Image: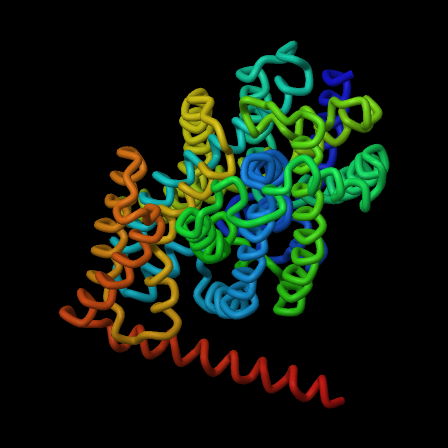
Length: 494
């Protein structure tokens, strides 16, 4: 049943991917941004599927199983961080439309008037996003092996998701990814909600569900509960997640894609609705697993165990399983496209200044399977707690946040400040993660963002800012935002 469902999913997704092809994908803008013509509905579903992947329905459920209700607070902090999209999203979109940026790194390189900025930020994005891709692959491996009692091995699951991500990326670039994402997001949210209702009903209804938790695991309904979510641990997990929408280039790049500011707003509202439902689903699955399977050695097996339990009809469990597989693949192929665009545009394009748009696109396509293979090899580590590993990757990406904020609001920011802050603080995060060190109990992400901010400000003040470019960029964004807000105000009054 599992194999047949996967085959059916692949066939339907491939058909949709091929139907999404529109003309020849001969430019970086068309292949990686869909010609900036995605409507609000597709943008919302694609953004949701890219953000909520194996991390949510496997990782967040596992985090709930491990630490209790603190996982809900952790995810709600991310929701608070989505306010950054409401604030920075229009600014990204306006800048991309005006200057033709393909990647967030390219925007930083142009704003700080130094191509090395784009290359450095791109390289460090690769260093941290490849492990994040591996986390998604591992999520699929856990899912398939857990639901089939290892009849389908962990490695087989990882191989399936790797191949699918490469194929979807190649067919039509971001268009095929966006349309298959939309299918996957709708499919997942409907089936996952049905499963939650069935589980709650099977465990005696909502009242009985929480009474059982309160009786058998009272610590799971409090913070820090069993001690997992201590204050410093909670802080270390949530700060990288709060800035996720800005720091992760596969997410911020999507702010360039909507066809209009109205589509951008639709994308944000749709994402918030989708995300809230997903959060409740993941938390309930984690709690359900803690009631039904209290002695799991690996918390990331919570979701597979729930879906293969007697409370979920086998066909529905398999359908939801494929939905989670699809969600993980949507994140991986988005990351593949983003990283390949960074390498082709901001690394190769800056090294070979005479490289044409077509040549950059060719390099981007060549890089896609290379990145996928690296992620596959990293996934074989088979580490526990997907959610924690996801946050560790995001901790490294945090180091670019001061430069992003400074690009829009601080004219004194310099290229030297960006490069120093990203390189030094990025290396510090890598060292802390590999050595598993937490000086004074603080996670690597907290040290990374603090050090990056200090270095960016200090070095910028000691070096010469690109006054002409800074003034042009910031003045344009301010002027357009003022005009946009004025139009919105008049519409509301009317």
